[in-house]
Length: 316
Image (cartoon, rainbow, N blue to C red; front, side, top):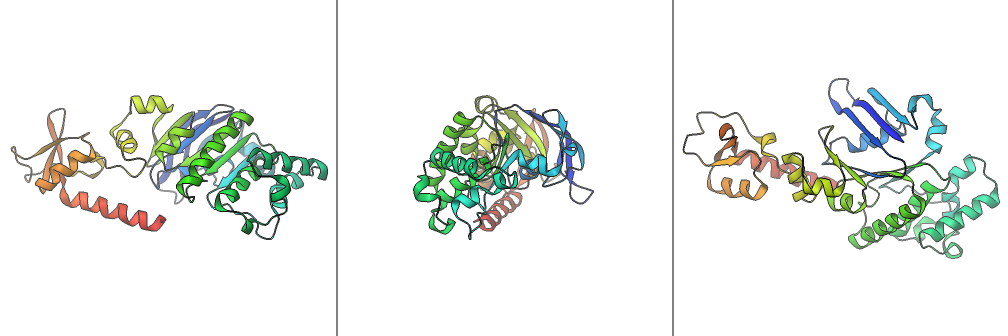
């Protein structure tokens, strides 16, 4: 259905934010892209409908290069749901849902029937809600409209970019259940971006975990849980989807500071062991296969914690 072949993206011509990505999404699959901020997951999503041009490689939909589609033809067969719902405030709910069907020149009675069908599908009474404005709806209700608007013209593919992350936990959980029910009913091909590992495990048929523009692991929730492919994946799952602390990414080369009797940690040690060790020592030696390969300092740990606090403040 959707195939990535050696796809890379660079914004400055020097550094790739997505690098040589290869994967295939089957028709009717719920496919989740996940990873910490800046890992390339949203860029990967947006390349599918050419909101962002790729720098290298090929993306195919139904064995046809996306560059061979007329842009309106491509986007009409792809629904798109954002975190920022972006409903038009001056339009009624029916008018918001009807935008793409009208552009495709559907007849009015067909559009009216489709709006009724979609509102019923997400548990919003058509008689009550079709004439309301977005400001008259709760956040969860608005997000439901965002989802059904993406489905209005019956697209083959739906892209969803962190659609529930701004909602309170109760609304978010309810919409996750609604989306699962909807997917079992309509069987669209859904590509879903999230930073929440619990959400990914709940929704995805398969999950693609990314780091620094590359795929760390791709598999079913059960496969990833049972056998994390890398220390990063193991820590990412353990940390609940926040940026995990991976020793290899923060250690420095071994030096004379690391003595033979220094505290040591295995390179794949988890967060709790890192904390315990650096509460006692300023610097610890890092071992891989019983060989010292580097050192980890308390200063590096504090820098990581500071960066995480800054990121949480920026996204709050």
